[in-house]
Image 1 (cartoon, rainbow, N blue to C red):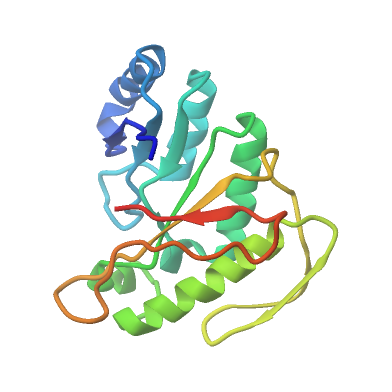
Image 2 (image 1 turned 180 degrees about the vertical axis):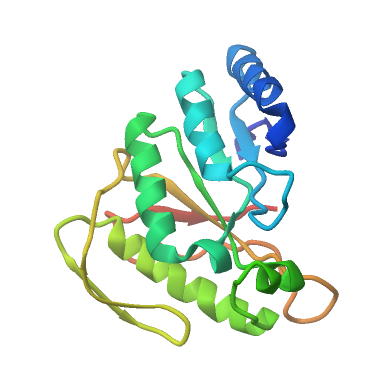
Length: 199
């Protein structure tokens, strides 16, 4: 098993110049990954996807991902479009870390859905199906789910790198059967991105 090393950043709005400097340093020094936390409900944090776009432009080789994108507050269609665009702009250096939603009160206070951990898992499964379908350009995406649906939306843009990873991670609070780390799913179609485990 090959290990990759990296750093995680919190996109503090009053420290953006330092974040950019640290990203350039990580890129120069040969780190593999840079994760940017995604907490849209936190008033002191800048928008994660905007920060990632800037960091991808500031660097040349490091792979960058949201750690992890808040699915309840962004939705699979918007996430799929943003991820594919960042992947194309960066020459395939964007990876998607996807979070089911671990801070229920903060999510609902920010206008997101009020879901249990089990409902979050179902929503995550539906979102993965939608994101993968939208990354396949040219087709018509039709998905009917309990939490997310698409009715005849055109897929695309596609990924520059066809083997781009889609990283899944469950984010739930407290002990019990609904709490689980990320897990690996099989690849349903050879042209679609892989799902890989994150600890």
